[in-house]
Amino acid sequence: MYEPVDPSQRPTTRRRGARVLLRAGGRVLLISDRDPGVPGSQWWVLPGGGIDADEPSRTAAAREVAEETGLELDPSALRGPVAHRLVTHGYSDRVLVQEEEIWLADVQRFEPRPALLSAGEQLRLAGWEWFSADEVRGLTVWPPQVADWLAWDGEPCLEMGEVDESTVPVEQGA
Image (cartoon, rainbow, N blue to C red; front, top):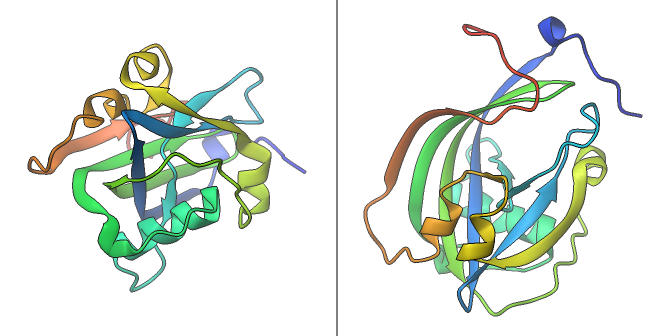
């Protein structure tokens, strides 16, 4: 069961993470996410998640794609990274601070079949969809640069610095 936490008492987790822009015929696969403690919240994200201890970012990115979409990718098929950032996610039950690399893979369009989601991921997942760049620009997407990355052609990695993507704000210095 999901239990919101007083914002000042939320546990903070710090980790490394990897996400993947799955590009197919000018479209990107996005996952619809939500914060169960914030009724009506909804946004779109790239598949991805935490990196295990001593796991290379590229390997973690491929593993996360398999867990969240069912698509098995060889890590060598990933290009990039496209971007690097330090992102803070303040949710109603926790705060996640993640140093994150974003990779790109050109794939054939497929129907996601997530099979290895954690209980928390299952609770937050609201669906998935393939979008064009124009469609992405009309959505709440984390990170918001996703539409621009659909045209990425191997340019240098974008250093995004520190960003905040919170449904429940995090106090400065938390």
